[in-house]
Length: 166
Image (cartoon, rainbow, N blue to C red; front, side, top):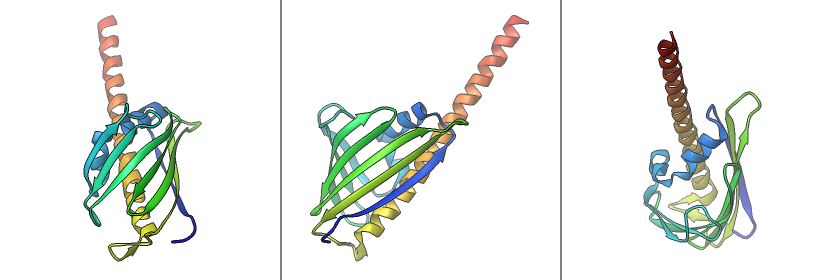
C-alpha cells in the first residue's frame, strides 16, 4: 500500500446525541458490537482524554493488537484517534450529529496507509469495511434500545405522577 486509502460510513439512531455518546464511550459494550475483539483496555491516561491510549486486541481475522491514541475528544460532538498495528497507521473520526426531528446521525471516516495491504488473504480495506459496517450497525441498534428504555421509563413516571395527582 503506497498511498492513503479511506472509507466513510454512517448510521442513524433514534437516540439523542447524548445517549449515542454514552453508549459509544462505554468501551465495555464494544464486544456486543463486534466479535473481532479479544481484549480492550486503557493503557495510558484517563479514558477519552487527548493522548490517552486504548489497547485493542482482535482475534479475527487474525490476532492483532492496535494502539489506539485519542487525538481529540469533544463529547458528545466528536472524537478522533490514530491507530497503529501491523505496519498500518489509520486516522479515524466519529461525529455525532443531532437530527432536526430527533435522533442522531453517527458518521465516521478513516484514512490509512502502511506497508500491509493484505490481512488473512483479504485486502485490509475490505476487512476494515466489514468491521466498520457491522460495528456501527450494532452500535445504532444498542442506542435505539437504550432510547426505547428511556422513553418507556419516562412514560411510566408520567403515569405514576398522574395517578398520584388524581
